[in-house]
Length: 142
Image (cartoon, rainbow, N blue to C red; front, top):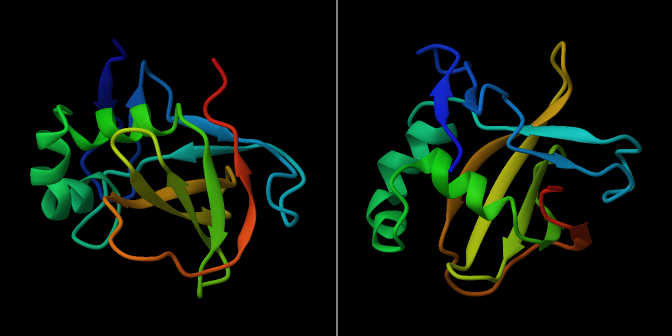
């Protein structure tokens, strides 16, 4: 079982899985705009994004599914494949993952010192998805 810690309490600090901020790698060319692999990070966050947001808004749902924390759920879901959709915001993408529990992961491209995708939220989707299919996320490489 992976060990989850944080790099600090600031909302922009990363959660770490076994000491690394990389919860997964988003393969280059999965989406046409990104030619090289990009890490996927989970920020400590606040009420709007990251682990804090997931815990605050969706805790009841993921605890019912048997997950003890947002980092645990995000790590588990990123091991699964899913269909990637664009969003109305150019740098945001959604990954629909159908394996139990079905979930929609929303992430945003961040061009900091280390370009990466940052998980905005993860929740049980209701209704139909909007957006155009832009690729297929293969799941975390082991």
